[in-house]
Each structure stands twice: as C-alpha cells, then as structure tokens.
Length: 124
Image (cartoon, rainbow, N blue to C red; front, side, top):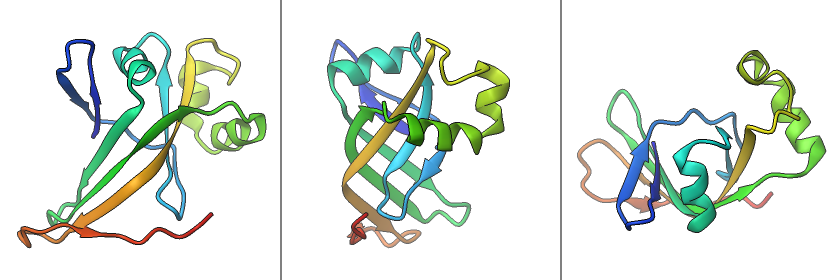
C-alpha cells in the first residue's frame, strides 16, 4: 500500500506493486501521469509504503518520492518488467512515470508484537 495526502489534507491509500526494491529499501513504483497520486506526490512527496505478510508480519517504509529521470535506470527497470511493456509500449510513453521512493525510516513488526523496530539500512 502507498499512502499520500490529497489537496484537502485527506490521507489516500492504495495498493501498489513495486517494480524494484533495492537492498537499502529504496522502492521503485511505476505510475501513470494522469493518476491522482501523481498530483498528490508532486504537491507533497512525503509518502509511506506498508506491506503485510501472509503471517501478518508488517513492514512500513517512510520516505520521499522522486521522479526518476536517469535513462539507464529507467531502461533497466523497464526491461525487467514485461507488464510495463505490455501496458505502456515504451518508456517514452508520456503517461509513464517512475518513482524512486528513498526511505527515511524502515520499521518492522512481527505479528502481534505490538511494537515496531527500526530496521538498519545498508548504504548503496
């Protein structure tokens, strides 16, 4: 799930499927320029990702979303994700946006532990 805030300060949460996750917990999310979250991230790039494992372990990643513009990075992610090609055709599609979410904080909680633990991040 990806949380943003809309123009009226209402939190908005939606499922997203990362197209890449790095060892330092940087998360890459593909998006369409016309989606509401694009405008919300432009207005306020502070986001939070939340994931729940089938056994109910949780991870939360708080960070800043940046639009990725580095051509080699975009090509590497594009070429490893067939669904991007299927739905968008090419990375030059003007609707295609690739977000790089750089984590400020990563927290983990075991099922029913009732306490999050900060996860140390590995430098890139």
